Length: 102
Image 1 (cartoon, rainbow, N blue to C red):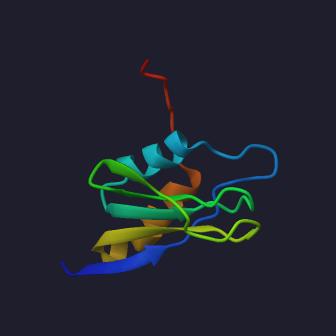
Image 2 (cartoon, rainbow, N blue to C red):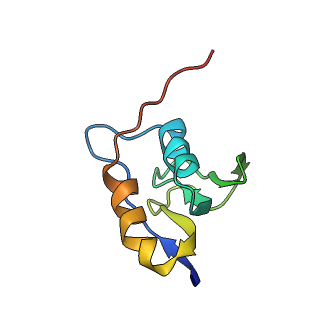
């Protein structure tokens, strides 16, 4: 079966309850065809982003100018072309339980 590499863009925050980084990371980690994620915060005062790949979470500093309200997320998909729609559906709607392991 052919494999397709494409980016899946997803809006994950809502005005009432923005998800935490650990929630987003859990979503990415649990979807087997998402091989990496790049995120830049839409908070104008937060200029960092992160890359997560292979279970390694790395903060990236100074990815945008202070005051810039733009941000976004790119998830890199490496799986069958026929699975893209179900992957997007899962990322958008699957309930995920995130527990504190301290």
